[in-house]
Image 1 (spheres, rainbow, N blue to C red):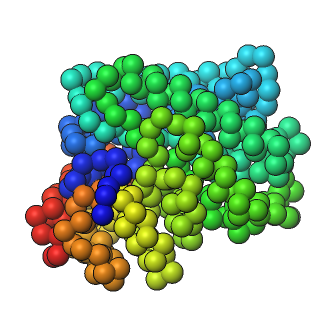
Image 2: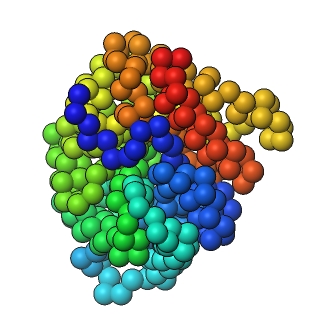
Length: 349
């Protein structure tokens, strides 16, 4: 089985969001704990423009497309100058890159950065009419083209700042299942936007991924992740919450892995099992091998060679950690590293 996995064996990384408002301290922590596969942290607690939608739309859209924040949410527009909200988003991203650059001097290896994917953006951003961009096929195509161009520039900036880095782009698509199932609400809230054609969903993702000069991981922490579609669209790996996988996900996931693609296994809870974060047993972070038992079980059910497991899987939290306490978030990342090591040392469990 040849591998196109864009990260080293027996590794761990984060999903993206972290608690707190200090980018420098968060970058120091992430690069210290996740030395083999660090990521660019997102700190939504800083407010508008630091959230995942505002960050991507405000900082990365090009070609005259920009956004402004209204009481109802982020609105897409064509304006001669970026409004204050978009400028704030761009400033947050620069600050985060400054911090990451400081703590990756001399770093060589894969470095993950995150952005919202085209379908979640289209489902969340509003047109002037108040309807989601998703409701207008031309607008959503324009949005995808603008996003791809902005992402290319973002990746180039990461390479410029951290010359030894091999960027891996994570496209966050939490709304993709709802888009496909026709569950995105119209402006009135009484109706839903019709589901786009399945071929259109795939082609837009394929076009965005194909326009990049870096491997793409597609992350979806919602039930019903369309794994086969993401595989066909060119994802180098998928990132999922392992607790949400069902039997019907197993065959497409097995095909993806056998084709040499990777799995970012969201195997560690983003919230403690009890309120006592001082006690590892109380938080559920006392048994790294137990956390990745679900991955070993999946391999057995798929009939895959357990020796391929460490090279295919990176261990992550189940989703972002913005809602966790700083202490728990750090513990989760450290636990992911330990869990990845157990997969390497004993893939069969």
